[in-house]
Length: 305
View 1 (cartoon, rainbow, N blue to C red):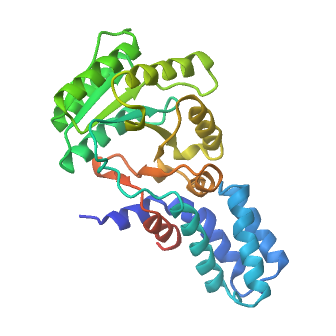
View 2 (view 1 turned 90 degrees about the vertical axis):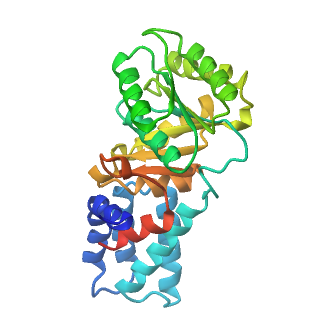
């Protein structure tokens, strides 16, 4: 069976080639001077690492080169690795599954097409495999296929499932689920919401209502808004995080489809600009391919094939 780290390295091959393959080709045998640093800066910016993170990395490289602590390509890579790990680790959480209270509510949000419903099913499997009791609430009530898909995941995973008829008020379903989760003393309630464009005010208001209604049953500090981001969207992900954070808060990200993109650098941009932790990453289609995010492993996979 393929190891977790090996799978991660395979999945990040496009990002690795896009960023570090290019940097490797331009630094080999060259003096670390301003011209080279400008070229590295351009590669980082085009790789969706973001202006803030890029500025920080380049300034540190410039200072290390000035004091001759960085003189060759190997040392450039070493410093890049260190800088990225520090940025990604600064929002690190202690535990995703130990909360000290129950139920913990994960309110799952995101735009259309991020793989949200499938991710909810995989999350339920993950928590169940780690010894937690789980309930899924299907609040994407206008898409019958989503409810049916979640029902299959719930049945397969052996977790509780709350749904209503097509077109039911999503907030009412969330309220019923929160009440049931509290009564049944489950560890995690995962609320799946409809995919919505972050530019549509009425849909964002619906999301706020779901949160308000859930707070009537579960204390606000036990409700965690988790935003699913499609890893292929690049810098647009930053604006999505900002809008969803303004609407219902954002306690953590789940970044999907990292196996199909050269834009994996967006993880660094989000960590630097928004200080929102990444909880899970999706690196493939199978159940095991939704993995808790580990900054050290991610950086290692970016640098080493």
